[in-house]
Length: 432
Ligand code: PLP
Image (cartoon, rainbow, N blue to C red; front, side, top):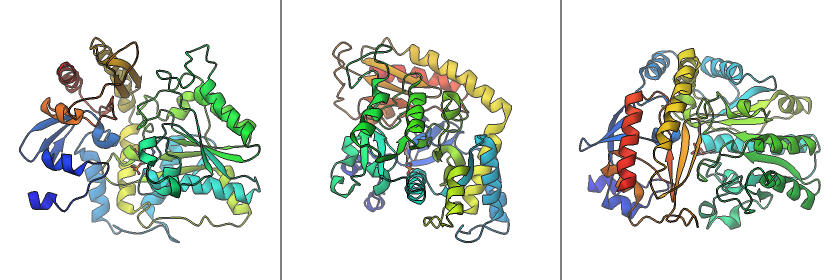
């Protein structure tokens, strides 16, 4: 095992710390995962926020197996289509259910889907002679790791070391972080100063800002749930200044926030919607960029080809998993279960507030961040002496904290008893 571990380099992982306390998973079922020594962990984060329907979900495995047993297991979408991609694209458009969002471009993951969105916006703006080329992202944003997506990275630590290679056309607006408001204001007297920071950037760069990319809830930035009306305000500003509005729902899509998509619940209409993570049930790599009919028609009218794509984007097996997911989450009982779970989840979170370390709990649907502080008044961030993920493992919990923020993404198929089990273990962990 030591020799095998020596050959693997893992993402966002301190490999020396990992070598001291390796976690090697062997099997998983529902919300529970097991390591090679047979230890059980309750997966509180849906793997990497993407296995929202439980590990080993039969519905997906059967669908993929049928595709495997069929005539076409592999094909690209470069110049030829296949039935699985056609089927998934049309079902996805119906599921997104927005009169404008009608064209689906497939990729193999979130970063690729974001790159696609950015490049569509850039080419669209060129074709229509919009002028200016600046993209606005938010501080604390996370849109992926490829150089384009990284240019829109709002987490300082993740940009560090790469800055010289990032696009100078990308500029940051303020994050809607109410707990640590960048203006030291509070709701509602703030009058959404964070959203207005976009207007200030527009004034500083007249005519130059053409695109905005934003997450409905900032995920990797610390589970930052914006105040009510925030997204609508951004949307209004984009419309007023003819700015392409890209909504990154890689994390929030497919019921994670309690709504099918956050944009519907917030009453905004993105020009481009970015999806990935759970859209295949987390079983196979898949991403999608859903683009407005108007943008697509602009390409067609100008006789322009979108010069972009990846070999594995929309491969038949991933598409089969995507179809399985749409079938699974479209069942009325699925939505009903999510709605019930949101309340149970909120009650469990509420009960953790008594821990002195808990400074803030931010919840949207079935995603939450618990921010740990050493002092609730000064909000001094808690600095653990031991890695929290390691401590969590001793309590039978699979967690991946973001600095001093513990993120919780329970599976949307979790049973009431497993959810209770999660909060019992979390309580003991926080106490420890
Ligand atoms: N967009 C958001 C909002 C994300 O949280 C992530 C990853 O966590 C990505 C994009 C990138 O997705 P991937 O890791 O599949 O490249």
